Image (cartoon, rainbow over all chains, first blue to last red; front, side, top):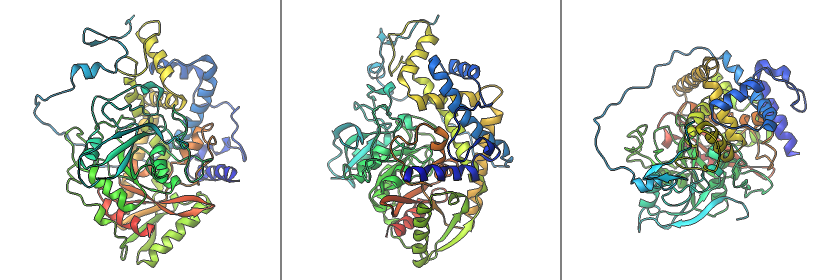
Length: 126
Length: 423
């Protein structure tokens, strides 16, 4: 089965080069989605969703916490990365301001769901 | 469209003559086309029609190319299979039960199926190379700064480049010749590529070429993929190239570093989609914050939501040092590893994808699993380097791609080496 092969090989990759310290959370055949992860909880996810202005439905929160927990666990291996003494590549590039043509106002407003008097119309602030 | 490779089919006629005269080109649907829908594979932009052309679209048309449609893609480029599109998955023309790879899956499928002569994709962590490998065509991610990103709807600015997809190495190089070069609208472009002639580099003369093979990028790959890869290396040696083992220990952290950086940049870039200036919106009750939250939840799919949440998390107070700062350290380490390696070798070779194309529907339930498929492609984005995927035969009837990474602005070198693999 190609499908089974795909998963087997992905685990192989994960074991050798991705999870490292998190290896004990993997089982031999399938990933156990019912386990609780320490990486993030529902309260934190709701807080982040609030910061990102994304409404999360109650029934979706558990799945989001589970998936995000798996991913954050995977990210934790970045703690092993050594400090690198890299030469900064960034330089400031300055130029004089010059007046140039820009987007026509009608064009700029054309995709807005609502406009008023040549302006974007947004919702009430409070 | 049985493959669902296009979101919009249209005809945009180019100039009367030029190097692409008589050539049809498919354009990924996150590259702006004036007056033609540019959806990014998202419900959020289902009705969006850009008021201007991306620089690469102007380039294509000026070169005489004819745009035949806007291609399907993972929503905002976030995926490796083209299954996260709001407009449904694209099928792989080689085996319609399988994914075409992503996120530029529509572009690669259109070229592989003969629906367009050439295509443009965008590559943030492998999104040109992955679908090229899975569909059996050529895909090239240019050096960061070689091709203008003006008019590319941003996902992760510091990582992404627009790149060509073609049936042959020479075809990809010809399209790169058209789109490469500085652009006053993109401050990250460089002078390199202004007078490029990449097409003439596709000679396949590898006599004396030194090819580095990092074990980190072959260990753990599917045996059938490794077998094709080893056969391609043997062919290159027979043509006069030398292969040597190299070590890129940093690459074991590339997937994690890539996703932290890409998600963090995405959380900022996608803040603009609030349903006021463009995108779905309106009709929701409540104040500013509530209305935005409703419009965004309505417009974004699951994978985009997940990446915005995680990016916001990784940049939030208390977690920034643990995730974002460490990911930047890893990025610097990957760059350093490649710099040191290119002191000794001309190109670095690996399988493009560690696995054969998965079945449709097999990848979405476990995001970590899907992200791991990007293990070999993300290092080039982190290090800003050029990389090409070229077909290296089939395994069990499915295409296998070989990836060649070159030094900064070393496009000629990887195009030449890829032409040898192709032969």
